[in-house]
Length: 63
Image: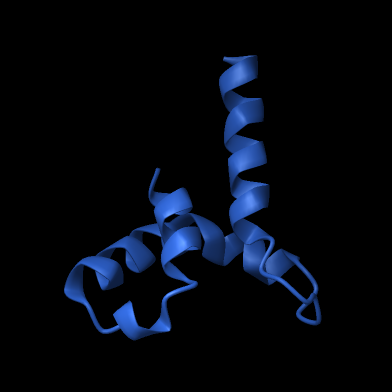
């Protein structure tokens, strides 16, 4: 849910200074940062949330 909230809130730049939004961003970056390092930097969109969601679904299916 945090990843989804982060993706939606990224479309509202006027909210980036809000403390709640900063907390959501910090929590989402915890899982997205390692994925961003692996993805090419010249992609037109940030696909790291999608990759994290797919990986989490794969882990849940294997568990």
